[in-house]
Image (cartoon, rainbow, N blue to C red; front, side, top):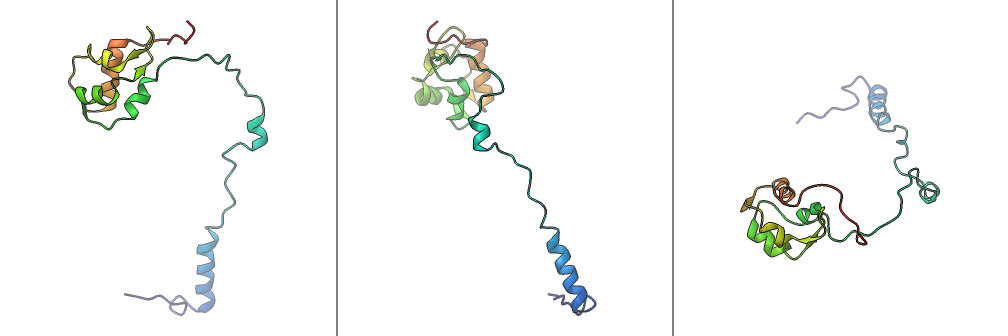
Length: 130
């Protein structure tokens, strides 16, 4: 093991300067603000979002995110079969959708979601009052 001292670097003054120079590079100015202040958060939103209307069922992504992958279809049905998901035709239970899925094993959540979307379709989801 080699120990470098201030003397081997050309004297104590020079070694001290190098030490200071290394530390000064760490003392940068603080980063720009990344988050809104409380006053900005309480103000009106920049974009009008419209009325809040409830939607029955959970998003498919929420169901798939609760599971670990890979997973067999029967295991998905056992764990999440009674969960109601949102579909363009209205809310449906996962077990009812899985009956129409031909695949029996899902390597990744993307594969599961693709097969389910092939059955339920994609598009706007009706709100609870429709």
